[in-house]
Image (cartoon, rainbow, N blue to C red):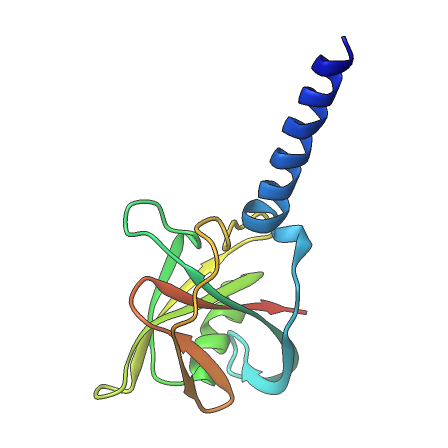
Length: 142
C-alpha cells in the first residue's frame, strides 16, 4: 500500500512540474519590462508597460499563440496592433532584417505560449526582441 502512495506522489509531482514549466500562462516570469507609448484603435497615444517573458519555440501545425495579426515594421507597431486587438500575450516571430518586418502572433489570458518549451534564438530590434523562424519573443501587457 505504501508503494502505491509513493508511486502516485511521484506521478503527481511530474505532472505538476510539466504544467508549471510548459503549459501554465499564469506562472509568467517577467524577465524585464518596457515602458512606452503605443497607439490605440483611434490613433491616440496610450502609455503601457509591457513585460518580456522570454523566447519560446512554436510549431506550424499548432501555434502556441493562435492568432496571426500580420507583419509589423517595428516593436511599437507590433504592440499597437496587439493592443488594438485586446491581446494579453504577444509573440514577435520571424524577423526579416532585410525587409525590417516580422510576424505578430497574439493570444488571450489562456494562451499556452510556452507549450513547446524555451528557445534561445532572437533578434534585438529597437526596444524589444524578435524571434527567428518558429521562435516567439513573448510579451505580456501588464
